[in-house]
Image (tube, rainbow, N blue to C red; front, side, top):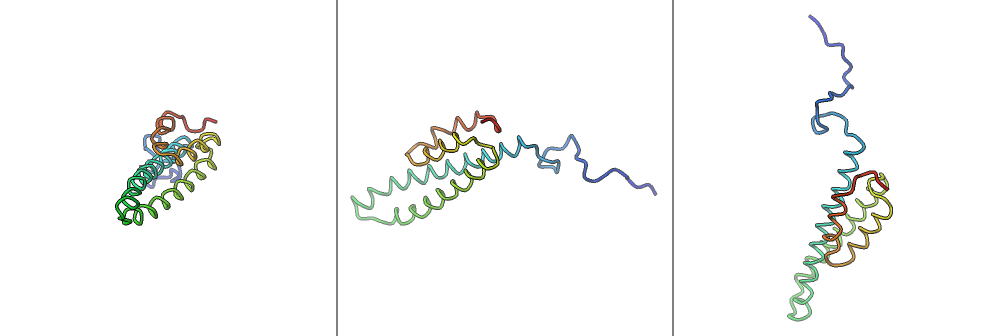
Length: 126
């Protein structure tokens, strides 16, 4: 009976990272940037829903929208800060780009406006 003596830690060059091959730094950076994009989009949508709930509370006396969307938006904002610091710390985003994402998250439609810049950006650039 023959045994295969190849080392088990060598990656098959034909495998994709999802099939077990080691991910390249570029793949990791792209995943981090994509994570920032997705969380920023969710945070942006929650921001707009919170803004839509404000007239319901103050004009019509229905505070349920703000009571629901307030904590959701707050949690998504904190999550955005966490993934943003992770992407910046791993050099997937430059400091300037990270600051841009942060300030965009503070204004309505901001995450939607900067999304294209994050898509077109090559991870690892400064």
